[in-house]
Length: 412
Picture 1 (spheres, rainbow, N blue to C red):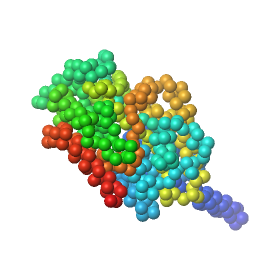
Picture 2 (picture 1 turned 90 degrees about the horizontal axis):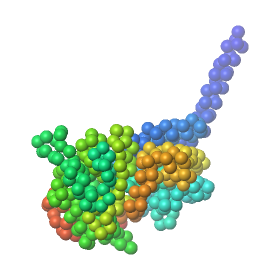
Picture 3 (picture 1 turned 30 degrees about the vertical axis):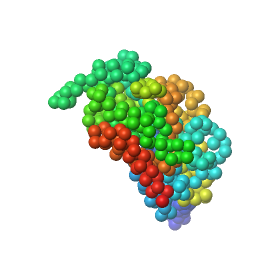
Picture 4 (picture 1 turned 180 degrees about the horizontal axis):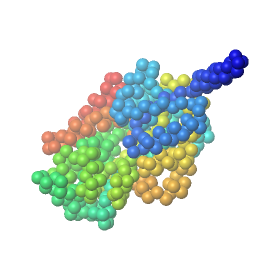
């Protein structure tokens, strides 16, 4: 009887020992990410599938907003802590490399995987000729979105656009519920405004990465941003991302500007969506918004002992089918070249819209000085829109603020 009782106990004890040994061998990877709400459920599902297929690896995911991710990662890394992987926009690369917070990822990832990336996408993750970010996609570009139930023909030039927007604007300040808008956009955000600046012929930096903001193109772009409301009577005071997005979803806005990450969300809300480049009254004829990527960078604090697990994770995440699934969820062109040739990508209308509108974009600079540009643009753009500063005054102030901000970044 005693022997019978001992046997299950021995089996149980052996099972506990094996379980403890298995969990002790598991390699943990901590990933901090900044993903749009629409894509997170899909991403978490994919990572869970990876862990089920690779029980010796555990991936811990922590979500942050864009700005919080940057500051939290900087603070934690400088203290020798933080994640192994940080997932975010490629314009973080400059800031992170200057502070030695991330390391070249192509020194860790296999050469076979590196060869699978689209050339343009891979370049978006480079700084000083080294790869610091594996791009999940290339895109993030803004385009003109229109509701086909309201706008029958997409505007092909500024005159078409203005005629369409004006015809669909009827705003009653006393009855906002029944007002309709021909055009709305996030007017205070530099990420939107810089498309106007590029479209009027401006370039953010000169060949030496010095700010190039006090010029005729900037004055023209600021004048246009002010004229949207002051001259053309489009939109309304204080329009921001949420206002524009909600009114468009409700069918009360004919056209808005928004990024590729949002397009599927509008289709899911029942909008018959059209996507085209944004016409503006410039010699070029169109706004040139920036293209960018989001992807994975490795913390300088990541242990080399985790390299094998990291390669397993990246090899899974960047299989063409998985990369396409994540990219399709955001209407962004996949970072892996083979993923772009899958039927699911070629037959997806929004994905093809995304690939087409990338032709009306310019690459987002990934130099650390870019942070000072955004900070210089924001308050001065808002001052012009609100009539507190002339475009000429704002262009000069932007240039000065950008130069001062870059000195701070460089510690001068």
